[in-house]
Length: 59
Image (cartoon, rainbow, N blue to C red; front, top):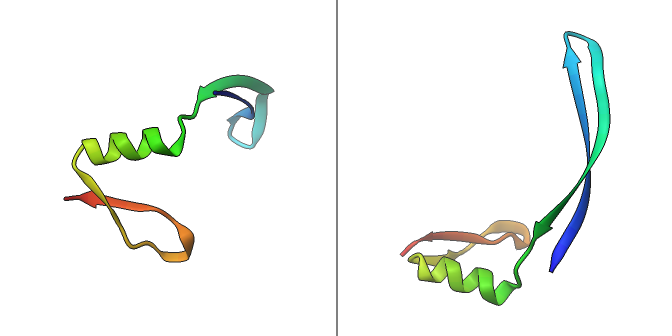
């Protein structure tokens, strides 16, 4: 399902702000089953990670 994201963009020159605007974009974020399948299909295995993070390493 595409997700809409609003991202502020600021262009500076030295300390002066030259341009500032907000860009709206769309991104596709697949479900966990798709992501996990792609990672394992690429030869990665899940590894231990601190504080609830996910880590992957080559098998």
